[in-house]
Picture 1 (cartoon, helix red, strand yellow):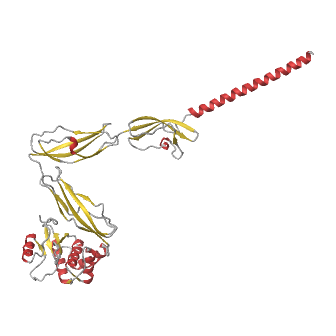
Picture 2 (cartoon, helix red, strand yellow; picture 1 turned 90 degrees about the vertical axis):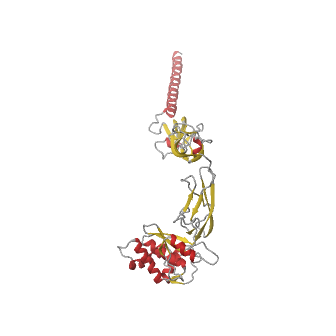
Picture 3 (cartoon, rainbow, N blue to C red; picture 1 turned 90 degrees about the horizontal axis):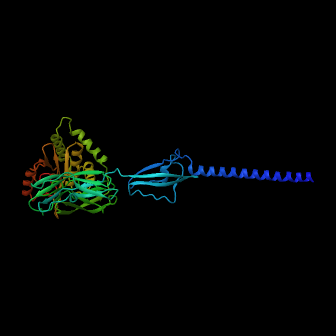
Length: 418
């Protein structure tokens, strides 16, 4: 019995040892599991992400911006709210692969406001504040304070320089210079827009809408003409209306309309200038002055282009090409040939046109050889005494008045002699 007991006792001891081993394995497993969880949440990730990411106020930020390897996928945790509209430091969570990282997003404001100012004319009874000089001001913060940089004295009349400051909530500043014109009485006279409002443009080319357009005012000297060309389609032939406006510092405004004619280009400048260069090579010498070059061109046109009726209008390249190849044409062809030759000879020239009537139209040029503008009209006239080369405006107007207003041009449109 005792053996049996011993034997039974021996068996009980063996089972107890197995329980101890199972307990030990379980504890070890739990410990390793805890260590794994700890590694998941608390591993060293300094080599994988930037702990702090800086973005400018109002800017955009992506989860991948925090990764040192931007090729890996990343996303913000569901509880992360990205706001860059306010300066500050915010907690963000980044998920990339099996890992979740805790980082910081720092929103800073280092950009100064954008500021555009205008000059003003006022009386002493209506002294403007700093904001009155502002045309446009903007900042990402939406919070801008506008003020004068220096104190202003309003004791004397005349133009007073002022400096306008725009400062945002972060202390970033932008300064702009303006002028206050202090007058005794209000200005009620609007500015006047003049010049070449009507233009011809080739399809697909750019248009210089303000070229040849001027604005004058009885008080202000720095008014810029504004152009509304929103309805012009430079890719489609046709006639389009352009609106020109100008406003002085007192709010007086002038508004006029111009006509933009968009046409197909039949000949290129290269084609026309090649024809012009062939002629200039035979009539222009290296030692000639601009005056002598212009005179040689005038003589050549008079002696080599015959007069005939033509349908060429508006397209000066076609007018010049037809005149240079056919060697005849009307006043528009004479003008266009002259324009091509003068331009290639390096002589400053501009177009001019008579005020048209039901029975009359005429074109010519003005040139500047260093002594101011002079008229340049190569078209032959019935009056054989007329020579249209290098004529002063006074002399041409005297001739025009004696010959049924033959050169009656719009002085508000062409301001070369005003």
